[in-house]
Structures are given as C-alpha cells and as structure tokens.
Image (tube, rainbow, N blue to C red; front, side, top):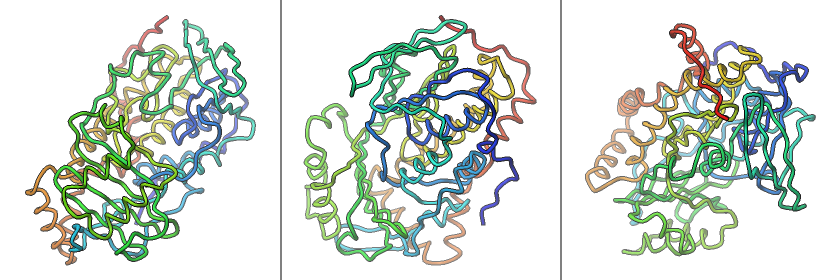
Length: 433
C-alpha cells in the first residue's frame, strides 16, 4: 500500500502577490503546476500557451509514489484517480502466443496509471481563478538584466506583439523549448537523440484478439507495440522502433512509416488492427526519443522546468512525476529566499539535479525493456514471463526491479532540501545580462 508522508498542501495557502510577475511558458502538467505553486508562494503568474486551447486525452503515463507525494503537496492528487485495470498484462507475439507478465500494479510503489490529460486537468483544477492565461501566444525575444526580464510575446490569433517585464521566467514548454532556444541556445546544443522513434495514440474500443482490460507487450528486435489498457477509458497504444536516421523519419506520414517497420512478415490479428486504427487516429504523438542534457537549468532570471530542462524520455516513465517534483521544489526554494532569485534557483538546481540525472539514467537502462536489441533479450523476456506465473517469481522480479524504482518512491523535495541543509555554503550563479 502506498504511504504518503505527512505534509502541508501549499496550494491552499493563497498569499497576496508580493514577489512580482512570473511568466510561465507552457500549459502542460509542469507549467500549470508551477504557476499554481508560485501563485501560492506570493507571485503573480502569467501563463502563455502556444495551443489555441487546453489539450485533453493523450498517451499513458505512470505516476510513481515520488510523483504522488509532490502531487499531494501541490493539491493535485485529490483530482486524480488510478486507471489501472483489473485485467492482466501479457507478453505476446504476432502468432498469438501469450505469457503473463507483470503490470504497473506489480511494480514496487504501485504506481498509478492514467492519461497525460488526466494530470493536466488535475493541475488546472488547482490553478486559482485570478491567474491570467493567454492562448495562441509564444515568446519571440527574451532580454534580461539583474532586475528583471523583458519578454516579447506574439499572439497568433490577433497578430499583435507586446513586450512586458517580469521578475522571473519559467520555461515549461517541452522538449523543443522556445524559452531554452531564446535564453540558452539552439536545440542541437541540448538535445541528445537515442536513435528511437515513439508513436502513441488512443485506440477506439478493444484491439482485435484481446479482451477488455487486457494489456500486451509485443516485442521484437528493434521494434515493439504495447497496448495499455485502462479501467475506465479506451486503451492507448505505444509503438517504438530503432532508426539510423531520425530526420528521415519525419519525411513521410507516421502511419505509412510505422507500417513499413513491421512489414517484413504477416502482421497478425492484433497488430494489424492496431495499425489500421493508426491510419485513422485523430491525435497521434510521433516523435524521436531524445533527452535534454543541459549543464545548467537556469540562467539569470530564466529557469527551465520539466521536459524543457531534462526530458527523461517515455522509457523512464517519470516525466509527469519529475515535472511535479520540479514545480514543488521551485516553490519551496523561492519561499525560502524571498527577494533572492539567484540563490533560490541555484539551490533548486543543486538539490534536484542528482535525482533527475538518476531518472535519465533509468530511461537509458529501461529502453531495451521497451524495445529489445535482439533475440537474446526477447528470450529473457519470455523466461521472466514464465516466472511471473508464480508468486515467488513475481516477488523475485519485484526485488530485481526494486533498485531501479527506489528513487521513484520517496519524497524528492524533502530529500533535496535535506541535502541542501547539510551541503557546504555555495555561491549562486551570477545573473547574466
């Protein structure tokens, strides 16, 4: 059973805005949670979002205990529920062979399964009504000095451009962050490609050959198709495969390219149905698997949070949790250092970075689990499948996985603050003009 540490819900602690305006770029889970947390800390957030409206639905995400602890402290957990189904998970091949394998429920810490849109909706539910949100708006220039940041904003609907001043800018605008590009440098300086593509979409109903609530992992050398079933929602599909030329992958429609990846032999009942659904899916995520590796997540009064700063990849399963933890800790350090943004951001990064780097390492290590490199790894998966038929085997597998998820089951904010309290005194990074 999940045990949450006793804590104060900061989101309910509405204070008068006294620390100045903060621009939050990006209205995903991380951006919305950060805006709400900083509003509770006394800041006046303004959120700008490239999209015309809030996004809903999306692909599967797992919320591990560390993420739940942060979500609880932020007031978000109360708006979430676990969509883990009662059905079992199976390892499968195209010919229809199946063997029971472990599911999210079997992992240490018992992570919750949900849609990314669930987490975004829950974060939005905590956002005070007085927080200004501007859709169809992006930054086009960021110029800062020691006292503030001048940001030029462009609205795609009105065509208007305006320059406004903020005391702090938060870039929570994803893997290919505009804030990072404007304030830190070009994407190629920060993006690290893993050489794999990922596609995800919602499947209408139940894929052929499966029962409602059944999840499967169809894994082959350098390619895989996963069906993630939910208790109260259509399943989502994840397809991933290795590539030697990421740029070339974007020159053709995703359904066409993915069908080619699996075209060397008969598709089988379930895979065929999934690819047919992909041909007609309205909302498909299709992107390369990349991590963001930056020597610093803040520069002067501009800070990157979430995927824009570190992107652990889908393989880590910690994207939402890491974003919530980052938002939670950022609010804490800014409260501890009122009027001293430089010290707050320096401590935030110093405390958080060791955990994020571990999450990134988990993403690299777990990639072969999602997309095996060759036949040997697949044979091992079937051996693991056989072990999970028995309670002792499931306990053994849980023990093997325990080390890789330990960092996902603790209160990261508390651990980071404790480490900061015992660390030698340090100097904050200087403001860069």
